Length: 462
Image (cartoon, rainbow, N blue to C red; front, side, top):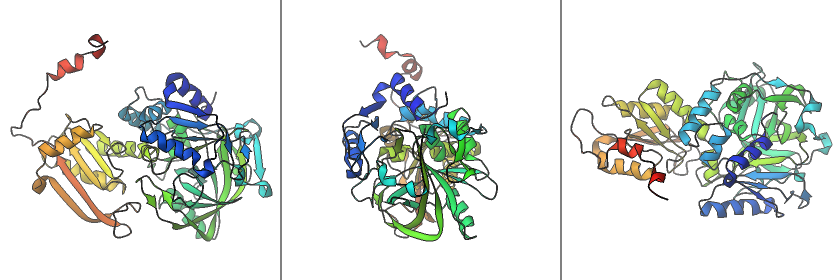
C-alpha cells in the first residue's frame, strides 16, 4: 500500500495514540473555531495533531471534506513521519538527510487508479467555497491554505515542490506569496515570455511529502524524486485534469488544486501570521487562477497553523540541510538547533572545538547558508543544545562580551523579521560560548559521566 496521509494516521494512532486527536463536533474553521482549539492546546503545552472530521465549508454548509492541523508541532510525530529510529530532533534530521540524498524516480499511474481523482471539478464547476478553508489568526487577510505547490520547470522538466501560503479570494482565485527562491525563479522566467505557469497545490498528503517541500534542495534536483527519497518509496503521480501529462500530480494526495500563476497580474494578499509569531504585513502578491479541483470523497486539508509552534517546527528540513552543510565544512560540528532555539532567527551549534577561531568560522558558514539565521551561539559538546537552560549557563559562564561577541553589520536579513528598520538589510551576532583551548578551565560539577550514563532510573524509582 502506498504511503499517504491515511496510512500515516493509522500508524501514528497505533504507535503514539497521544499524538493524534479526532474532533467529531461540527466545527466552523472559517470562523477561527479550529485555530482557537489549537491555540488553547498550545497554551497548555499540548501539541497533538488534530483531525477535524465534521466541518462546514466557506458557505457555512456541512461538507464531507476534513481538516488537519498541528501535524508538524511535535518532534516525535515528525520523526515518526520520517521513519526515524528515535523520536528525537537529531534522529529526524539524520533520517531526513539520508532520505533526501537517495532520490527515487516517480511511478506514473493511470488517472482511473489514482485515489485523488475520485472527485473532479473542472472549469466552471470549480468552487473553492466548497472547501473548509480555515481562518487562523485574528489579523489574517482571509481564509488561508498552506499547500505544497508543485511546478514543472519548462527549461528542464524538473519538478519543484515548495511550501507557500495561499489566501482565498473567490471561487476560483487565490492570492499567493512566493519568497525569492525556486518557484519564484521558475515563474519569473515564464512571466518574461508572457506565459502563465501551471501549478498544482497539494492540500493534503503524507507529512513527509510536505517536509520534503520545505528543504533547501538544490536547483538541479527533481524534488518529486527527493520526496520519494524522504518518504522511502517512489512517489506515485498521475496526469492532471487540466494539463494532462504536462503536469503530473501526486496520485495519493487528499485534495489537489490545479491552476496557473497569472503573468503580469498581481493582487493584494495578507496580513498573515508568520513563523516569527508576529503578523506579517499585507503585500502585493501573485494571482492564481484555479482550473480544476481533484479530491478524495472525504479529502483532508493539511494546514499549517501560522505564527505558532507548528509553523516553526515545520522548518526542520531547513535545519537538517544546515547541519549537513556545516558538517561537510567543519567535521567537528556535532549538532545544530534552530527549531527549538528559543527564537526563530537563532541558531545554536554544538562544536567539538579543536582550535581557537573555529567557532567564528563555523558561525560565519552558518550565516551564509540562510537569511533565516540572525544570531549564532556556538557551545561545547558538554552542552545539550535542546536544553536552553544549559545554553544560557554556557553564555553566563564562558562568555566575555568584549572578546566573545561579534556584531556583523549590513547583512541580508529576513523580510519577516519585525525588528528590521530597512526592508532587508540588518545585523547579525555571533557568540562564542566555548571554553578556551589549551588553558585550564573550571570543571563542571557533577557525578562521574560514565556512571550517569549507566544508570537506569527504572531500577531505582517505581
